[in-house]
Length: 384
Image (cartoon, rainbow, N blue to C red):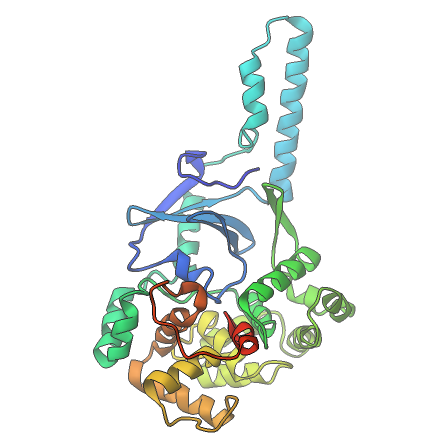
């Protein structure tokens, strides 16, 4: 099959939700360091995996358009059977008649969607829409939050003019946790490659689009296998391989399959402390998971970007003389922003984080203070 790269391609597969760009900007949210499963398959069209299904998303006319691909082995089996059936029919027609419609044959070869079974089911359509509403947390009106943050923070007002529509994803807790374990001392492009490799090695193949295979995220059981650490080291995970393997085993054998999801129902500090007890999980990773998977909007992940923003625009006296983020500095920054922005402080932090990524800087924006080339390269798009 091919990636859907226009709304006119196979219209039967496209659905939409009302959603103005002020409420969601895919070009900020999907490549902005929250999830590492999305790629821009064509300008303005994003393809990725949510809930073990492959989606393409785009925005037009104040609507979020989405298509979900047939991606199970069962569907592929049905498609193959249908293809074989049509081939037998054409062969029979060829032997019984000399009149062959060459246009029909050419169309079947060129149209990758000819043999794809498309079942329009109102219940499934409703469920797909609900999945996206949950994933993007569209029940929250972002413009109201922006207004609230701007009233208490003039600096946020300035940032918001260029960075509207940035909201926090609600991700699967397992995928979110183990993805962010991989972010330690890392940058977005490299993390994305690591996640792709672990999915293709330990996940389940979902479908192929334009010679690109898409896979599910590995299950907790797969990550806890005895040979997982060795496999991950061979995939370039380095020291992170041990943390992924050990954390998976700890969760599976000590807490159980549903433990991560159950942390959605406990207070923020309790969930954060529980995550920090896992191998390789510190305060920043725990806060990322709390914010992006466990329904804790007050969690404020503090990485190098947020630390620099805090010192530059809010707390110039904070952490003077420190070359790294100490435990106290981390706590002080989080508390300051929670007091400033309120219960959705983590969402406001997400806006400032995106505004500081080099990939989102406008060409005419004044350059920041110069740094050594090596340091600049290391911190570019970093989420450490």
